[in-house]
Image 1 (cartoon, rainbow, N blue to C red):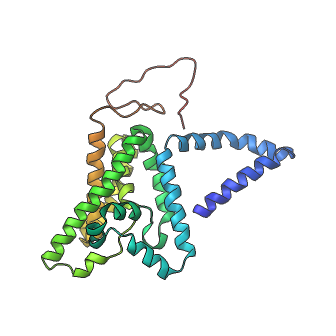
Image 2: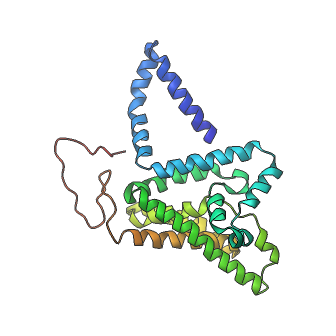
Image 3: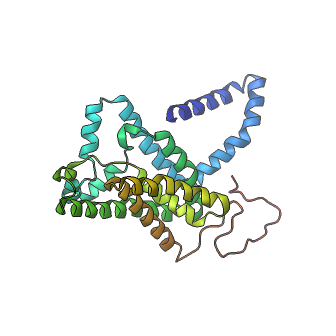
Length: 261
């Protein structure tokens, strides 16, 4: 999916260049420009989300091209397993968040969710608050999962090898951002995101009861708590014709909302 997107971007700029000398290409650019301007505005309203997408997409492309053994070594070294959290917690938390787990499996789905649901949440919360929400989901979710792992090992339910597992990925931040979006969405869109979280987070945990699925559930709950906490000082931003929670819409005359997408 990432390669397809890059191909589309390249094709668009080639079409614009061709439009300078060929009338049919110029007409095609004129027809498509309203859509590309809307896409540009959407990206500009969620800079943190799309910057993060660019980072983990780049590391995933590395995974696709590098030898599997090398990637296994790299991701194991940068994992948030118990051994690394005990020795270098900050480095482990930072580096683990730039890799897509399982050699990039599901990259397209991650990009789709970040570019739609999490990007929408950034528009409503603002960049500083969505960074706080996603980081809190990642860090708190990881640390709570580590406590559960320690308890499982001490109780004899898991092997000591659990301390050295490969545990990386962008999913903790993603589910935290989705939980933040679900808190503000209304109507069928809210139910759609909630259904996605139930299907992708709650059901797998209920079925497998694994440490990994527990981590996703904890990250979701931590993200929801952080989102609620971030709304206490000030309501969500009023954008794209959607009023901040509890704030009536103000009518504007003479110009449209510049942030509409």
